[in-house]
Image (cartoon, helix red, strand yellow):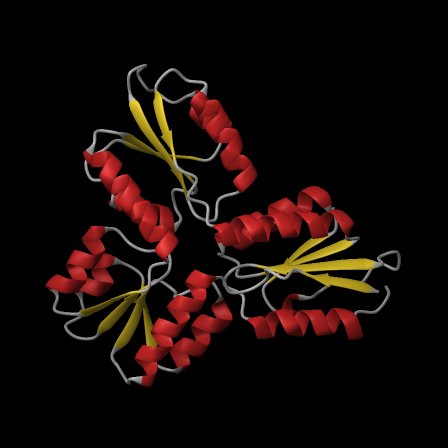
Length: 287
């Protein structure tokens, strides 16, 4: 069997940076220690961190209830109101927001102050998007994910629009949305804020899936970028599987499968990727 593992699979720069920041705090014994939301969308990693004493705060109310400790902001970032609650409660704030997400915060904050309406391509429920919305000030904000949403946009002809994207949004889909947006008569300021790592990961996944009989996508169940990889791979390879760890394997190899592709989301540790890769190479038997 031929097994192709994506070179871009696994931790991206932002995740590696956030993990280093958090582990530095653990080594410094900076407890009580919390992250605002899971540091990454990987249940295995979060469980290991909990065993080390790292708590997870899920809401502003959770933060407000604390009287001491250090709160690490995860890669997705937060709006200014969350930072304000942390600081007003006398807690220590450690910002591990991905620099690429920070860039979006600066863009929308600046353009909102200039009178632009803000369009964000992404999932309105995703923590990164909620954080970006928080930096838009008093500007009108729309989170869109489909061509229909752009077509139905209630905007005047002379309205100025700033169009950005969630860093892990599907690059092909963002291009489609931009093309529709630019056909409108209003002024449209577009910034492609999908990070290079996401673009490269998606393109490599698409290429491998086009060659594979079976495609395996590894990542957390709540990981947006992993779901996007699964969608992309499913378009080219009908036998595409989404697994979080080796324990999720509940299928056997089809006897006709000769090439298996493997990719992984930005929150997937390298050891899990290797476990899956080794399993496929050595133990995945014919049905």
